Image 1: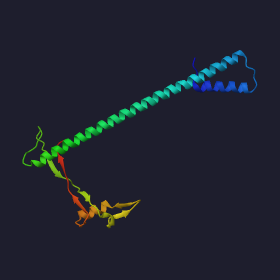
Image 2: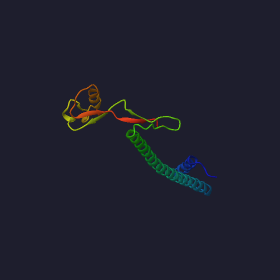
Image 3: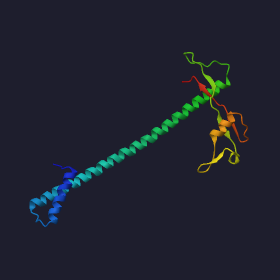
Image 4: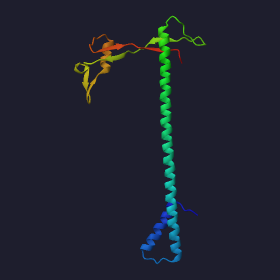
Length: 166
């Protein structure tokens, strides 16, 4: 019968202490020592095998995760391309009523918030700030541009998005 790892180690420790204490080993004690030692060796081997299996499963899961992340990225890129080309076609043909089978129309709408476009020269402006390094205060710059301030190195653009495709 295979003992638990802790029990086998405990038995082996007791036998070692008896030997160190000067107890004369008789045949029965030698046999018990050998059994306890074999139990410890078997328990260590089981753990090594189990850890090898766990590591194998971890490696397999990591490779599957990489495959899944790659597939997700591929599908996201495909989705973006389909939306982009659909939006382009709708923009180029504003007189055509693009609808689905239920009559839901595709619309091109302006984004509610503009995009900030920045060129060179911001480093010496009032919008430059130092945190850990020189950085542009995009929030303040964008607010000022929306409120009508003129800044040589920056503009805001209202983009568009496609509605009705979902």
